[in-house]
Image (cartoon, rainbow, N blue to C red; front, side, top):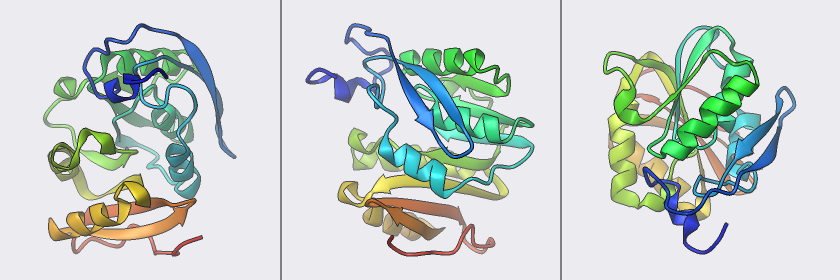
Length: 214
């Protein structure tokens, strides 16, 4: 990705010229070739944090609504939709190029349970059994906090969120901040420095036990 284009993945319409490509998503239970492009997060490969998250957590509700927040070109959405064909996966991103790629990737894989759209297109009355995200840390702390405070409250009763953040990019401080905001946070594990965080409403059953660094 050329200099400066890595900052465009959270722009609504990236100004960098398209350069379509493909990457391979390879998990023990899901493999797929995905279309990618410049101006979209991790357009040159499936992000290692995304892979760490999808390998560490495999349980997806069999039905209901699940959110992939900041979907990019759709590796999380594709994996969730494959694992739970009876669930509806809402793949949400401010980047319209990313949304279009996710739609195309879901269609090419025959995943009719993926709904890719921008945030304002998500109906206000939809709540989510799960929220998954490799959140856009580089948008800055305040916008990131605003983003999470917008979407975490849309978890349904008993719902849970799964986040992955590298500790060098503030994974531990994000966990502390979420706790200060009243959320129950459990570190599910640490894979190559990536913190896998389970987040739920305080007082709800723990989403997972902590297994420490590995």
